[in-house]
Length: 434
Ligand code: NDP
Image 1 (cartoon, protein in one colour):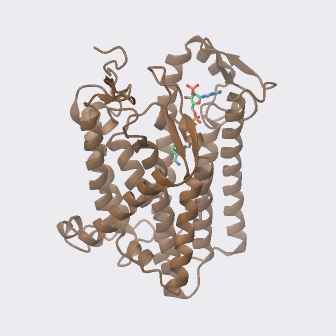
Image 2 (image 1 turned 90 degrees about the vertical axis):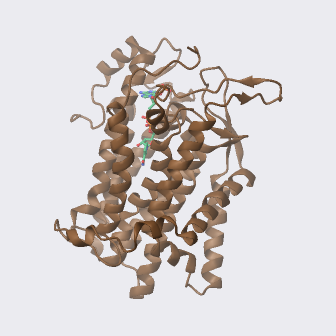
Image 3 (image 1 turned 30 degrees about the vertical axis):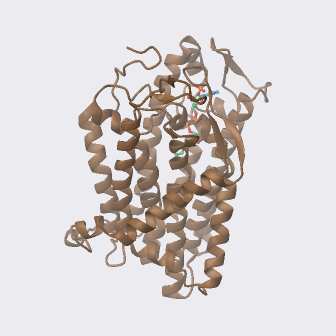
């Protein structure tokens, strides 16, 4: 057994039955969410028309084999890949890996976003507001949901297969052992395919995991939102305040991620998780097609919130965003050696655990802020149906699961110092509650 890549003993998600259920269940959930809110049917209240929900607009095989939608998506994915490899940015090193090396990443999200915005504005001007690409996107949400799911499965299979190939050394002489994910090396192909066997699969210097995390899914989410706003404008001749709110609030979140994308390099997804179906599906399908549910609902059910309710939603949003941003900034500044006046606990690893400021309130106060911000997105759809609140339930379970995984990791890493930290900061996410 390799020392660099120990065999994984603990299985997440209740092992094989769990990962199989998630791999099949989440894509079905995405189709179900689409069926609850589209141009032909949208639910109100809690009632669901089961005949509508179980009737697809087109035969499944027609959608799976739709060459126009495949071309659209492949152009999107590989077009972004070419931009990712060629546009200017700056280089940043990731955290130290188990073999003592660090990977270098090209951070150029700002250039890519600028290209996207300029292209959209140019197309808007050239097509006199028709924007056929956005209309195509809006009309093929279900097809794209299915096709991106298949694409994610193929990508997960590709990275699983290459994880067995030895890495060529940069100087071309000999090979290196690949670094596998601590959690994705059980030897069971299905489980490892799902969790991700290799930690940082790359083709040359192109990092597949960071690219998928930041580009095709996040930016598609933004475009889907815009396509819904555009659809409403074409249909009604104006845009409702609720649609503007959802678009603006979610765009702030996405662009904040783009502007601070080097912060991603210390996130659990990049430092700890392998890249398998869990992340490829999450990044490429779940993010764009479930996070856009609110704007999709508003495209078929236009809602005016009015000034007072819109102000309440904005206040909730900014409160959440402020907690999220300022706590993440505080931790980041602290770890760069700034803010040394704040109380902290010295660990045996020569790093310190901050237990003051935001980080004295709870162990993951940033999750709390993120969740409040997400609540404002659902509130923007008013109270016509609870289904647009799906996201905050899903996000709560994601954050709870993340917190428990992080706790296991930190307990193992910091030992007694972590016990001391837990005494100083007893709440996990919500101060004085949990
Ligand atoms: P955190 O930012 O909370 O980072 C956890 C890591 O930070 C720990 O593993 C540990 O790393 C270090 N750490 C923990 N506590 C302390 C402390 N008191 N002092 C110093 N270092 C500490 O979690 P994530 O990386 O999971 O999330 C980052 C952000 O991304 C969050 O705001 C989250 O809400 C957001 N997010 C959003 C998602 C979405 O879908 N919208 C999905 C996932 C995350 P180390 O081992 O290096 O010490």
